[in-house]
Image (cartoon, rainbow, N blue to C red):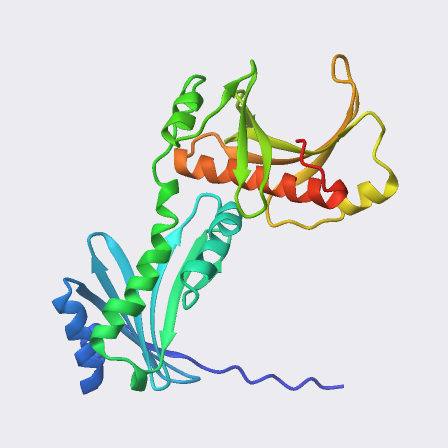
Length: 288
């Protein structure tokens, strides 16, 4: 059998800004960005399956890409992330709740935030005050991870204080109790003081228990817990040992050792909330 070649669409790129011709309405949008203090960079015309023009815009060190198409206008911003899966788990739901018109596309290196609308429905002012503002607002959610926390011993306590958290010092770890107003429940999370290293990665373990009993968990409980698929973190089983007489199941996340106080707070809250949800599902008690 002879295989026929599959036609591949050809995309032509005109890289030079001076080679790109803007329509009058496109010029109005660019003028609005200029008035708002943005500097226009390279404009690229891309032809193929629908012609579009991409314009690089910069302000105060931040870069955005404005895309013109016959059907839509899009504004987007690219953010590099040190821990993209963790950022997706923490900030993805926040973006959906606070900025539902913003699309967040995560990959291994970071996230692309964008908002799209049709030219017929927006004015240049709307582009700046609504579309751009939404993208910038979503981007600010990630800024809490920008300021690193020093790694050595006592600095963890300082970070917890800076995050406004109440905690107890329990030797090798700190314990923190979280209350959830939406459920009327509470849950304790624990963070180890010790830093664990794997190659160049340095982490601290954050755990919270969802099962704590003298009897070993049965098959149904183990199936309920360990078959859950979560975006970040995982479950572990701890057998009785020494002074610890109970069987325990815990939820754990390995958080970066260098992390801002605000992001550390979000990690702790996520671990506690997840473990409490499982505890409620297993027996509806609220003792952990």
